[in-house]
Each structure stands twice: as structure tokens, then as C-alpha cells.
Image (cartoon, rainbow, N blue to C red; front, side):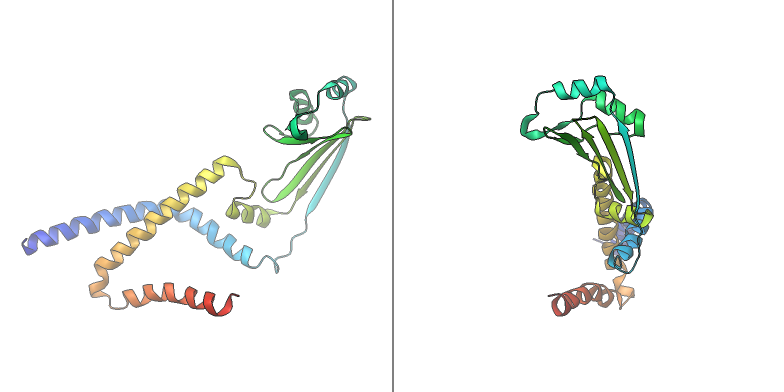
Amino acid sequence: MTKPQDNRRRSYWLKTLHEWHWVSSAMCLIGMLLFAVTGFTLNHAGQIESKPKVVSQQATVPDALLTTLKALPPPPKDRAPLPEALQAWARTQWSLDTAGRDAEWSADEIYVSLPRPGGDAWLRVNLADGEAEYERTDRGWISYLNDLHKGRNTGAAWSWFIDIFAAACLVFTVTGLFILKMHAGNRPFTWPMVGMGLVIPVVLALLFIH
């Protein structure tokens, strides 16, 4: 193969790698910023103060609905979604979405946990007198973003986003590695710098993590 052909082939692959690299980096840009910032906040969670805001509300389930709840047979393993009528009442009373949430059923009460990013919530209905209590805890925006970082209580859509984002980051890093390789001949510090990116975390892990 002649040298001009080698140069054309190299130019083609370099152009292709640059296209994949910039497209994947553009897709990852905001996500990388989010994960970098929340990586810092998670690493310093003990130093970043958070004052949870707790809101507790009470109401009484209508008599007709309470009678319906009492007449329901015990669910298998004492866990089942809330009945549609109770879900509709909770939406009306507190704008509360309990769809798809399993509740814990007992002879005395119905309890459903409603965890979410950046906080928690729960709903309890006393089957004896119909008293219902809803409590919501909000730990602030930093906690919310930290939970997005961890994928905690974020649902299927965010889980898919994390998987797609991870794949885009993989494309970004692998194409970057190949671009480094193609330019390494003119940049003698390329591989020492890449090596440092591997050696430093390995040494820190071996010496300081026990």
C-alpha cells in the first residue's frame, strides 16, 4: 500500500473518530456536568448541611369509602396496590399520586411508602375510624440531585437515561482514546498522562483504602 493511500485511510478514520467523539461529547455534556457536581456533593455529604422540611397533613376518609375498604378481602402476603377509589381520594385530597405503589395491609391500617428523589413520603389510613395521615419530607435540591446521581427512587425512565448516558460516555472515552493514539506520535506526553490516569487511582486504592 502506498503512502498516499495510508494518509487517506488515516485521514478517513481520524475524521470518523472526531465525528463520533464530538457527537457523543455533546450528548454527554450536561449529564457529565450533573454527575461531576453531584460526585463532589456526595463525597462531601457530611460537610454539606441539609435541613429537611417535613409537612404532615391529616384528613378523614369518607364513610362510604371506609366501608368499602373494610369489606375488601386481605391481599396476598398483606401487600397490594391501593384501591382505585382510595387513590382517587388521595389525589383529590393531597394531589398525591400512588399509582403502581404497593401498600402494606393489616387488620388496623393501610400504609404506603412513597420514597422519591430528595425526600420521602408516606400515607397511612386507619381502618378503625378512617383517619388518614400524609407526611412528606423534602431534603432540598442537593439531596434531589444526589439521588439522581445514584438513581435512587427515580423510576424506569431515569434508569434508561442513565444506561444510555453511560453508553454515550463509553463512546466518548473510547473514541478519545483512539484519537490520542493517532496523535501520540507528535505528542510525547500522551501515554505518560494516560498512564497517570490509571496509576494514581490504583495506588490510592491500594495504599489508602482498607
